[in-house]
Image (tube, rainbow, N blue to C red; front, side):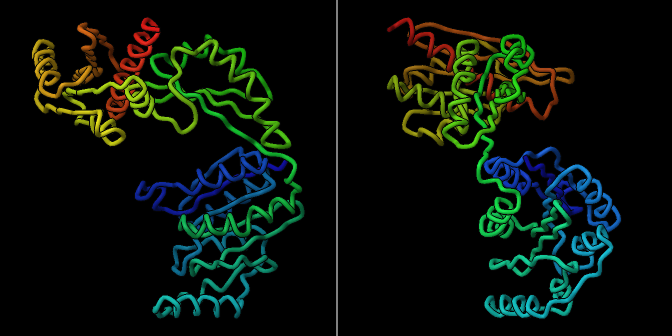
Length: 390
């Protein structure tokens, strides 16, 4: 089994000026061809630090993929850093310069002299033609080890992954016969530690593996299987998935790409219900996201001033009458220095249902926690009511 590491290069990443989406994309495609990924590293535009990072990565991994630092400016040092790792010179390639000139001409642009730097790559490198950008990429083989340096522009990086890197890695490391498949189960209304108590034995499995990932108000359970085909991986995942449903069923709202708001909207559609949301302290996010999925079933009212419980209930009753909806959700999020308090009220079928809970996590996560908690409560009540009626 080949092992890989990803090194994203750019001081702008360390400063938080742009978000790293490249490593997520690369991680997923490596997973799909059976490559284990053990580490992601981000390093600034410093030749010495990049060189040291690559040297360390090569001690641990068979494959090191870098993104960024292949532009024409002084602070694009990836080419030189890779050359330094192997104590090799950079070599000028006239054909690369001609390709760069052709792309500039095609886009009605004129290159500057510093663009010529992009025609240099470490000696003995394999050049990867970049058909969608001006930064040539390259691969360098060192025994069983490989460094692949790709542009940081996501569109260019993704194109080169699909047109060169995947087939290259499959052939070089004989990867055709194994894949890694992940399946994610989403839960709400139950904390990570409680889930761990219920399915802790599954977390000791070696293949498939089971892991937990906590988010504010939501916990994901990830099942990952290594197999020789997707069919075999699915077959390995199925019994583990069944056991997770057996133990966590009431708290599971969906799998993989399903979101909690999609889950609630699906319930409303299945039961042919319309919902009005009255929210305070949440900036109208709950109604905004629900309305985006089902504008014909959702009405939303956002109130910027604090509301008492009685006032919130009064507004809910008024709006339910005005909008002629089947149920009304009231949400109030209040914040202080130590915690955030959430009041969720649901009026449905002539009955009031209320839930209060507090959140002591990072203040910036309070909004997402309130969103997941409120919709988790709605979902739970709708499902329980559905069971009673059936």
